[in-house]
Length: 397
Image (tube, rainbow, N blue to C red; front, side, top):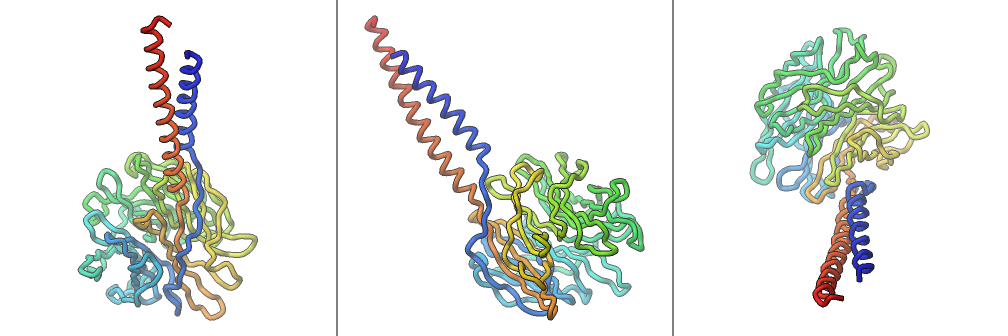
């Protein structure tokens, strides 16, 4: 009987070790989902933003050269409404990003061109009404207190655990734009009304490299991970470069030195999506065997390493150019993707929808359920063996 008890106990310990390790370190993949479709076809609309509304509907916004257009999907990206123009006060926009604030308001960020030709960082607050009708406030200009020259806000703001907001921006270090630009963040403690604090993440002057567009995510443990686009020679060709990673664990006040994590020769504005399973998806412009396309990779170690990138399948033909994309997490745990690319032949733009499926979520649930069943059976055997042992001891056997 003692041998049986020992055998069962050994199985129990093994089940704890095996199931525990697999549950914690089980590596899964992210794949392209079945929902695909066209959002927009026309003249030069690009650089989109995307956000999931409280009721699960999707809102995208993109720069159409002289205006910002929005479209909505109420069926998880299968179909999209007609475009609605956002009033920017007569100033031309640049790249667009969207975020949902904790107060239920929308935060649209872009840069608007003034009469002087200079661009300024602005945000617009959107109020979601009945039937998801959006009312936008007038653009609010934002000063960048730590920058030497003009800055560009091209990425969504993120909510920090302490209630603050973090907004990635990149800034020139001289008026002529000859010196390389640096990657910074703005911090707000009043829900995005004011942005009085600016912190440098990637310092182009000290690091000797160009940093520009970036994106950030906040992990449940409070770690903030930023992926930064680095370009080799922006005065010759702004497409060349790689993705670099920096991390903050003190609310964005200090950052680790940027390290290169992805290099596909051609890169564009990064878009990040944090999955329920803990995977970090990086989506952006890359180069596959000399062909410019849009692709994604996944990291399971907070952005230190990424899987081999997989093409999104929207612009992988000659004569097209990726002009940015955006992601947003849907209630079902999949990632919604809006991507734009230009056709060189006639300068028209195609804005498309894709979704990415987190295969790890289902796999982990299935694995944990099996482990729980296995461990439950072993526990029953242990209880039964212990009962038999007590009876044998009471009988003096």
